[in-house]
Amino acid sequence: MDAVEEASGRRLSGLILPLPSYINRVYEVQDDAGGRLIVKFYRPGRWSLAALQDEHDFVGECAADEIPVIAPLVLPGGETLAEIEGIFFALFPKRQGRPLEINDDEEWKRVGRLVGRVHAVGRRADAPDRTRLHPSVFMQEHLRQLRDGGFITPRLRDEFAGVAGHILELIVPLFDEVEFHRIHGDCHGGNLLNRPDDGLVLIDFDDMMMGPAVQDLWLLLPDRADRCARELGLLLQGYEQFLEFDDQTLRLIEPLRALRIIYYLAWCSRQLEDYTFRSTHPDWGSENFWRREIVDLQNQYQAIEQALGGGERQR
Image (cartoon, rainbow, N blue to C red; front, side, top):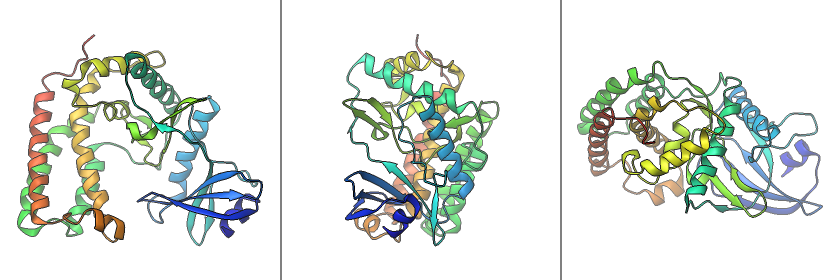
């Protein structure tokens, strides 16, 4: 609370409510005027100051274009990031809403339009200090985390590495000629709020990255792309009202799913010392756990091979 008061110049009441977040520490606070704020303390060592600034710049540009996002507040000194004892933090206005439920064709197109508008801004500049969603870097980094950290059961380590290596060999060439630009990076339904007055709001740019446009579309689908061509087509109808989409990149959906599987495993490995994570994932890291993960990766390899035979949207 002292840090927030010093950075913002506002006096706070005694209210402070912790909000759920595995990666960062997030709290709701209240100032003396009754205004509610959200303060996010970023986990030390995860992002550099320059990387956090890349995120804030992107969200700020979206807000300046009147895209419905929740941008960090500008502090009295003109910056959006403050620091206490080496920990960076930011303040956001509190915005309430309910998670989006997509129930009809127009909703799918509306979401597509929102993503298209965000990507139109994303193409205007680079984010040099953010993650680049290319498997030769992204997947290798997370595989090293799992291998070097000793998280994989020793008797299954080679089998896991073998399946992951086959996937990597198959998908790396698919990304080499693809356009990368700033994207949300974690654009699933839980990060879309429906507000009574404002409509859709895209939240939580914490995983913002440089990557292919299709990354911000496939996570919205209710099933694999070959089983929900209609929903994908509607998303793209909305998207292309603002930006042209390269149909060839649809073949990246299953490779991107493989990257997400590896990313999530590495992410979980970094949470093992967290009491809440341990209590809710007691089986994580066991031999049975890794056997299931190997089977999942083998199935994903087959899904990638099958998907490479198609890739065009149904018009």
